[in-house]
Image 1 (cartoon, rainbow over the protein chains, first blue to last red):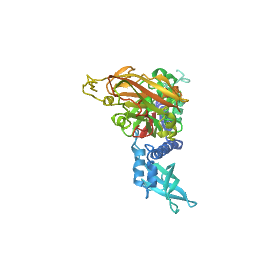
Image 2 (cartoon, rainbow over the protein chains, first blue to last red):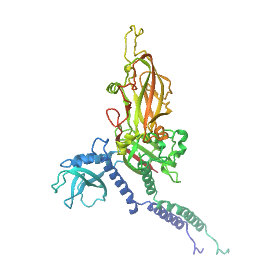
Image 3 (cartoon, rainbow over the protein chains, first blue to last red):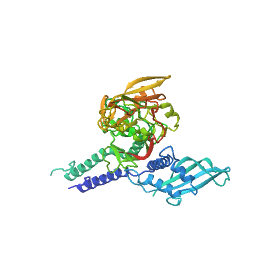
Length: 166
Length: 355
């Protein structure tokens, strides 16, 4: 019997299985995390940082200065209080997933025609490898800002926080 | 001998059938492959973010009078939920708006979807507000699944002002008269011009057009001076047995130097009851008013002087809460924290999950 030009069952089954496997891999591959998705978590982190700074710069009633203002005005800067408030706002509040968010905070101001910057506090040292986002808030403080010899006066300083996830 | 050329074998038929079934199955999945490329998670996160912004940074619509004071029969006039006090104060939420937002008269998902989530796609969602002080939460929506789009916003909730006029304030401001008479009038002044002008920061302002105010009058019987029976008072005056009746509550407006009664107010809460009782009604010891901003808005009294005038009768005739005498001015609802509990901000977290 001449069997030239015929397909055998095992070959058909093998072809079918290969196609199923290919389809499975193609479908699975499309749900991979693409670089374009990264801005979503960045945005969430940035919003959270901005909200936390706004919370800290809003006093509970009109009789008191804001906690953030008090923290900067204290000499030296009350970094421990900043750390506990900021970490509380970013990491433990709410019902949703808990995050291990780290930060590095500083404030910047102009004095004697020079831009000066001073640290407030940080939860980790910056190594340069972090994928950090920035949140900022202008705060009015009454404080003598070095190196100027000027007496304390109302000044605007820019509080800047770098945030990243571990 | 039979010629076998041109025949198909059983093997070929089976193999070809399996091949075709697999091919058809793969072909049918091609359209589904593109669904993955839409990255539903990005969409869910974006919708959660958008909803978070609407709730936290927008006061909603209608804005004046604010939507939260629309009754259940008017809820279809509310076109957008927003919890912010005003568009100029993002992140500062109104307690009244939060309470109304989670009110049971709004039904999940339809009422919330069309006013907060928007869009044609039937998203599932959960919106919650967690109070940072009491650590109590309110939420609307489904139970969270494993994967969802999410945003967390840190906010402050503004508590409204309230005044409790009890024995201490009555004695401090001499808010009771010294004559034994039947009818007593007591007035509370709400000077909206001063309330707007004395506090420029809207976050801490007493804003009667946007927020409800609460006036509690307590210890009413303590204002009745007791007498033992004598010639002038054969029966004596015993404050525990005196009959106190709230006859009416009038809302008066001072405009162009003329004081005129604008309306009567018939929604007082008597003696701590949870429902209102329209005057005239008997009172044991306290009267509370929760005055809705619509009362002030309808009168266009955002910058006017408003007097809330209570009229009581007491039997037998006696002294009582009364500031129509020469000793006392109307009780001023103002920014002195000794008289009025001032607006206050407290921490809260708004979370939106969408899937």
